[in-house]
Length: 453
View: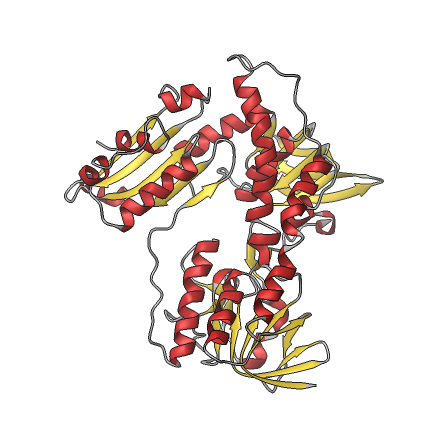
């Protein structure tokens, strides 16, 4: 059955549904295709469910920190099944809500795997979809590891679908997923938690001094972090797995019940047959210009994790790019360029690590022009109050203008402090102007003015 549209959106996450809604509101005939449940990774399989797990384990963390400061309680434990039910109470209604919101705008929905035909149409099951424009917003998926026994490795989605406490769990890779889920697992009652990192550093996108402190914290919790560890093979015997890897100490082994992929994600475009419509791609996604349009096929746009842009795969980035796609589609010309403000990023460990703006590495060639301030803050009131000994910051300021160039934070409240500093950077505030703001006291935000000279 053939269907003709003004726009077909492939992917029903945040980078797809917002474009579909904007164009439908202008009277366009819009179709949207999704292989999985409507709502996307962040809502259903990433940011939101992860933080619901985190909310439960925050209770464990708080009790551990305050147990000798006057808080008397029976030793707490996590009921993983109930924690999963709590997460599902938010997740399960969302796909229907998303679908209903699209239907109200007259957007036609298709469920299934999308693949382009040689004539430029899109095949979804028995449906053949023709359109003036296509928007690819299929997100990202775990990269191939290329190791023997890779079929035994589960994904972050599988982790979030667990109903029982993982007893012995290994995370491959030292990024966001591994550190966040490793801490959730350990606080959730896992006996053995291991992170195997191929390189000599973990959380490479974040400040090295703060990461070192987070590694120390995680190891203190009982998480085994193995660096320079290259996996050779994974073997299954009955209900357990043996991972063989090369380490600085030679050939090593770890036995576990569950292995989770945390070694990076790539654009989820492999099965679209984009060659059929002459869409240039890289491992990072669809190659687009500054207007989010494919450089090789003007009928195609892309945004979010499926697009090859210079920015990291974050939901706010997808939102910015999708807005530009919609504006240029509606204008029917390349009128609006994608520009990015300073965008904060957070690793939701406990305590969290946050960053915004330039890093110390970014400014190493202009050290005479900037002020870099690094300080551990475990003796500051905000950390003492909650008995958190792992807290610090690093700020970067332009000496000439006294404007804030970057900030890197570890500690309680870091995920909110970074938002305030992000606003300061995007508004072009000087240090003096930021310090002139009166914050509620005592609060995490009131600490910010002491982070700058």
